[in-house]
Image 1 (spheres, rainbow, N blue to C red):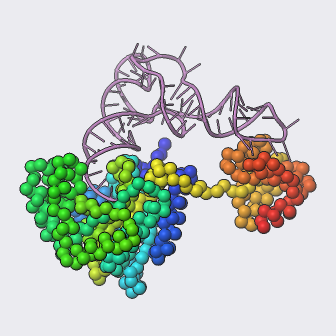
Image 2 (cartoon, rainbow, N blue to C red; image 1 turned 135 degrees about the vertical axis):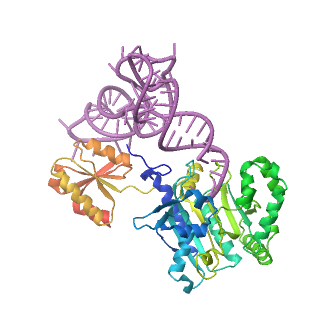
Image 3 (cartoon, helix red, strand yellow; image 1 turned 180 degrees about the vertical axis):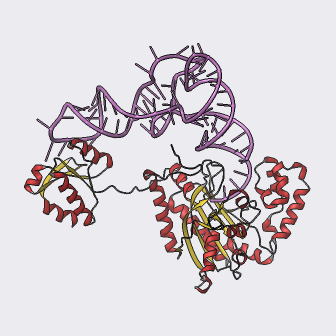
Length: 416
RNA sequence: GUGGAUGUAGCUCAGUCGGUUAGAGCACUAGAUUGUGGUUCUAGGGGUCGGGGGUUCGAAUCCCCUCAUCCACCCCA
């Protein structure tokens, strides 16, 4: 037997409601905030991700689905959503549009990781980007969007964490200080963190080993080492967030795993849940587009994981509307009734009314069971008698009542 | 990539000191009701016991390998 590849899964009809619910809420908000949808290819030139996400990151080092296509070009299944959008911005000359350009997307994302609850090799993200506006009010608006999405979905018990990690001007000096600090305590670090000291000092801050955490509490804070412009940006951002009553918490140890982030970073996490619990993450990336060969263009965005949102909706018991069953099930008894039933169902659907043919069972009983099992509100019964008289029996499944109507009269009423 | 746990019907799980033909509930199909659902009763279909190899007269049960899922690390949505 075949089974879905490791870390992938089927989204079955009965589970679709959560996704459709999230999509409809997200799209409605995107419209309100003036975002236009963009869809980019599932795979891209591998170098796009190497250059944007960063060569030292886990994603590029060991998680990308990279292969040579038959023409010998190295392509990679999208491991994140921001770089392709920036590529599209450049490729289509969007800097000529009124700035900033606001775009959102739903797309599958691929990372070769060891699967676990809430973490998959293929997952799906809703995300958005604002390109071409450096102002902290945009940061606030993007964060407010993310928060509003979570609230409007009905998720409770979540917290919003923010931090500022500086930019190309001030971060190198900060990282130097951080290294200095940790080198003074190297003997107390866990083995992993000793490696981080060279490779990725920022990540020292979010180690979960207790002794490292204790060191992290006393470590120099990025927000205390910002250059003047980053400092101003950070201060303004908090003011704006206060102005729109967004309940953020500053987390000095919030750093993110992609190299392109500058200044603002943020995450939304549920208060309960396992280790794979972050449901939304994002930040500013003012150097990314320039790094991809464009003119200096600021950007900010975030992404949410559909699977994790759905997981949280289910766990929180959020009531999610299911897609309604067709209004009519057309039951039929006898050979003559089968084509008549098919025609009746077709006429109803042509007029925009939901109707489906019952399973071809000889016993009417089975067809009524079907209507019941599918939650179809009305059964239409066609037998030899009805066809002969040009009528149809309409049964209200919930009220357990039924009446005989002339076919044309029924159709007029059903369609009207 | 590291460590640990778990894999028996579509689902939830019994069954394992090795011993006939592997079970239950739910779900599904049908009958009771020759043209009427939900409740009830009855019957039926459905299993390479995750896969492969080994030990044995005999393996769902013991051993090895492998695959998958879950948990933690790592990392992230």
